[in-house]
Length: 271
Length: 274
Image (cartoon, rainbow over all chains, first blue to last red; front, side, top):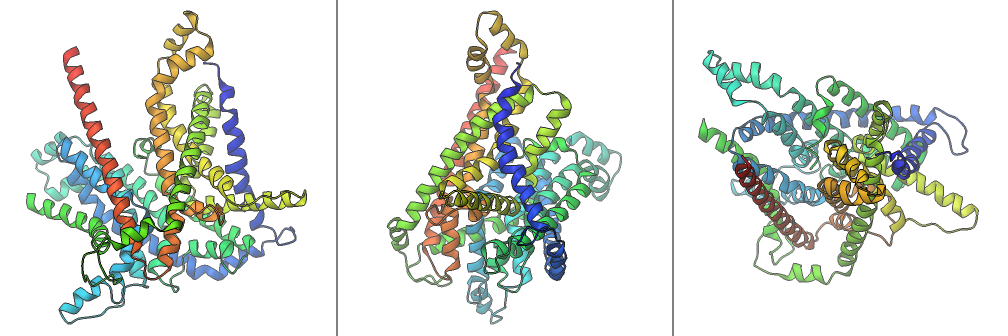
């Protein structure tokens, strides 16, 4: 088919609505209100180092917890029969299809000071504990929202591990621990790296989870950006500079992860 | 070992579903409390369905989702046909650009589009014309983040297709457009449908990007939900969650049964052929 030109409308669309906006972010980050070149915005981001560090730290903790929870689960899933596997995948995806605002709201009601969990503790005469508006609550929200993003890529990779390979290792005298560390783990590395990217990227750039579960005291990068664009502190130049820093953080994370994973694994897991 | 893994799966499922269960349970609660169950009622559902704002935003969501995913599907399918005939280098470049909105954090996509629309509004203002944030900006934004998924779904189907089938159609007297609509299109239809459905679900579910580009008259459901969660107590959310959960469950079950049946049919056919 000689139909190169049918893609032209999309090229124009991409230029207008994907590339031009990003160039605008770049331009805004390096200009002041009068349009003159400045690096003041970028250096001003330095004042928020504690927020940047907190974002990366909380997102990293959430990613590690997701990995620890998801890894055994994905392995168990991958060894089930075909129809059970399908049911499990559906069960994992079902909460994902509920809007994440509702899922986060659910945790708000559970963690509140007079919420369900504190009532429960009250039955035993302990508490109430301050659970909402803490960093722990933010991490919990991240883990809850993004856990499926870790389970699914791990599962897609592990399903491909032939049972006979594992049996061969066992026959050759490997202990369960040895099988896990020398056979399953190396074969599942691409899934791990995809999972880490898919959890870390949304976690580090969230602004809703921190606002709903973290109170006012646990601002993340996303909240900062939101404040500059839609908040009282309206300053799109500083907001663009922070967005740029966020993109750099994510690019760094992805380039590290791409060292391990193959791009091929992308398709198929989007649904 | 068996019971250990069963317990583990059960524990993770409990973690995933307990919060949703709590929402559903308290949607039937008489009092506004989110911790004390005082009695059964369907009041919140009634209130929900007489809530003008929620119904309007649901309608907005559906309009934006349908319009944007139709545009995205046409644009993405055309793009896939064009990209498929590119040479390796340019193709890699286009695909990298295509993946940009997928790998970029949503908030950056949102604010970058907002900047674009603000600039455009200023430009229009300078020539004396009016441009407001609303359905136009929402649909433009939603198309932009949906096309990449359509392209990713259609392209593999085109790659798998036998190019000679198209050429045979031409040899047998089809015009190129006839050959495309009668031969190529049916062949890649599953990919197009998958892309369309993905665009639709992403659009319905999107909050972050819509949050930055919507106007006061074009609130979508996620934006309304957000403003509801900002008010401290609003049990209507619980009712809304329950309904959304039920709808999603129903859709997934239908898709799953359909998929399972299709697979069985396929296997039977395969068995007969062999």
